[in-house]
Image 1 (cartoon, rainbow, N blue to C red):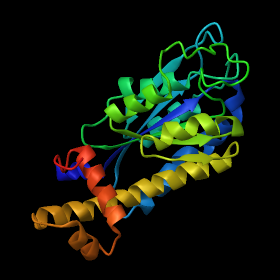
Image 2 (image 1 turned 45 degrees about the vertical axis):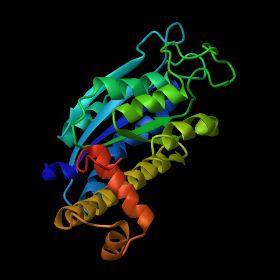
Image 3 (image 1 turned 30 degrees about the vertical axis):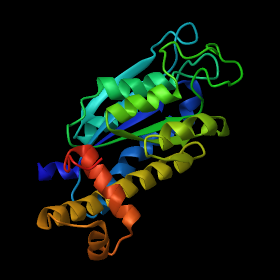
Length: 258
């Protein structure tokens, strides 16, 4: 099972309503180049698969689709074709089916059992039911999820969420979605700056996988390890070692670690 440590399943959960045209145009040109560059620069070989989940809105706000999940692929050329085919359209009111997109990523994608599971939410509008003006579903998203429910679902599936907000209007709603799963929220302007933020997220996660490898090797070589001894051996703070142990437990490499 050790070889699974290098497995990374990364899903992009992307708003593809009409207002997202600027980002999607930039993504067609840069997204896969960014992923390739981060993978090449990683401190250890990465077994990477990518997926894309599109979301728009519920009828009558949008009658095209609510979500559309494109499965994980290890062949980046195939993922490039998916990204190239994304077409921004529709949307209706200001809020969108954000929760549905996250739920589709959890339920409709085939995540590998021990992979590092990451999702990157990219959007410019908040979810329904968070008090944003002009909300056609002000009482809540038709899917029934709330911020707490969506993050609970991500946790159940072992997915860490990062969120990129392309407008100021999503910071308040996207931040807890990411932070409550152990991820982070990033502000990014349309297009190129969002792509750079994606690169930073991926590079950070790849660095942590290398840390996890070293921690796992120490755990197996020294069954009676202590936190202080491990911190000293790795020349790393207790907080970072503890976070690594938690990730390893979450992925099933150290079942006794919560």
